[in-house]
Image 1 (cartoon, rainbow, N blue to C red):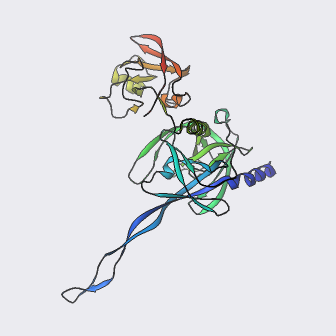
Image 2 (cartoon, one colour):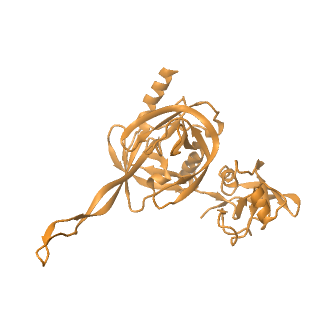
Image 3 (cartoon, rainbow, N blue to C red):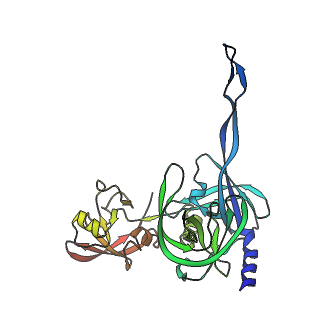
Amino acid sequence: MEEQTINIIKKTLPAVVSITVSKYLDIFSTPLGISPLGIEKSFIVPKGKKSVKIGGGSGFIVDKSGIILTNRHVVDEKKAEYYIILNNGERYKAKILAKDLINDIAILKIQAKELTAIKLGDSSNLKLGQTAIAIGNTLGIFQNTISKGVVSGLSREITTSENINGKTQKLVGLIQTDAAINPGNSGGPLIDIQGNAIGINAAMVHGAENIGFALPINPAKRDLKDLRSFGKIRSPFLGVRYIILDKEIQKKYKTTLDHGALVISESLAETLITIGKSTKKSGLKEKDIILEAGNEKVSFQNPLEQILQKFQVNQIVTLKIFRNNKEIYLKIKIGERK
């Protein structure tokens, strides 16, 4: 087993890249001068702009033509330039092809050929306890850092803080692992014992040990397929606003059920999950409770937005609805988020 792990890592490392984030910032000098009173005084003098590294992360090559997967938050700085550093030290400027805002995924491209690529696995068949290996650019300094552990949880949900401005994002359906995921590892691959990418390293929990999270690889596979077929990522949506029910929400909205997704108007509650702007096209009505979508039960552990990601745009899906104290079924055509 140890020899197999070593061989798999040796085979995989050439496909793992470092990403640097650079931005032109104002620079100043503070020379000493003499004030009219004869007192020495420092003056701030602008000297122009300089390209400064402001961040970084990891990524991995998924196509020998230079297609790279990483986290969206790694490449979300406005007016920044992104550079890819290959395992052999070669440096390329990266172009952002697409961003998946729901799943925190970004697809990049560099002008290179015949690169080593990682094979993408299947994150729908993961088992608790199976081997998980995280690779990345730890702390933005230590390239090709390896940590080995197991898949210790599935379908996890966390809210992450993306930057110093306090912007947050809710991520669902995550893989939990005890393989160490540190700052700088974001965007690197989580691989199985066969060397297939099963996830994209995404987050760690500050103050906790042996708890890291990775985005499952299947949404990224769908994004790549969309990009090749349509030139963009197509995000499925229903065209409704809703809130997940529990006993507290049940009491607040005076519903008869304490589970499912309650469809509500745009004027209600601030903590809504927005899937679209109108319920008219979908056939759903305010106060409907969506119990199932495509035979999958809606719950906190399996929220509606996570279920929707399993469907394709324009696919017809059956919803189980609770309306006027009756269960009914609606056939809904999945739309595309604009």
